[in-house]
Every structure is written in structure tokens, then in C-alpha cells.
Image (tube, rainbow, N blue to C red; front, side):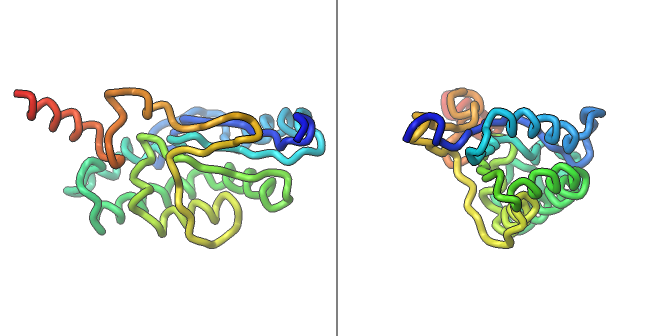
Length: 190
């Protein structure tokens, strides 16, 4: 496959969409539309793949965790998943125009979306109904999806993963909390 035949692959990381925290005054939907103009010009007739490489959603820093007894570093439970679901639902509402803009390109066939997990949205691993809602917001498809930690684009010679994977402070086995893992490893060495 020649370079001119390969799909164009775009990587975006660390948008940190939030449910309540202050963000930029510039609309994410408008930013995406301006970005899309550049993508469309560069890709020509080739398909485009947009890969969100972690931390699209900033679940762990939501103030909703302070409304109850559960925290993002607690073991997964129905109560923790309920908080995750509420956080993501509010983000989907808050950023509805952004998701509509992306979904319109996906549904037109111009764009394929890929989503990898990072350290701030890792909790989606435990929330299948929430992942389904996210996928529907991005693509219009109402189906179960698994969100991985890495993706390979062999035609491009690329392996993508979120940056926390190479950071000894933030990389934890099994997508556990960095807070608990750091505390646990310190307490074991004492």
C-alpha cells in the first residue's frame, strides 16, 4: 500500500473533558470544525482515522466524587460505576455539540474513531453501559464496545498508547489507582 492510499491517522490526547470543572472558553465543537478543515485538506480522498489516545474524559477529577462515600481509587463496585455513569452523562450533555460534530463526520463515512484509555478515564474499563453511551455519542451506533489501552496501525508503523504507560508514577498494574499503588508500594517497603 502506497502512502497516498493509506488512511490518514490523527492522534489526539488529553482533552480532559469535564462535567463541572472550568474549561476553555473556546467551544470544543468549533475547535473540532476548524481542525476538520485542516484534516479534510490534508487527507484528500483518503479516509481519516481519529484516535483519542487517552484522557478524553477526566473522570477522576470530577467533583461528583465528593458527593458521596465512593472515590475513583476505590475497588470497582456498582456504586463506583454509578458515579462514573453520572460523570460521563454530564460530560456528554455539556459537550453535546462536540460529540455531534464528530458523529456527523463518522456517519458521513469521512471519519473513523478509535478511543484508548488513559489514567484519567481508566475507570471506563468497569462501566460497559457508559462505554456504550460514549460510543453512541461518537458514532451513532448503539452497541457494546471494549476500550483498549493500545492500538496498532501496522500500515503506518505506529503503536499508540497513553503517556502514563511510560511513567513509573502513573503506570499501575490492572488500571488501579496511582494513589493506592503508590501508597501500597511505599507501605510495603517500610
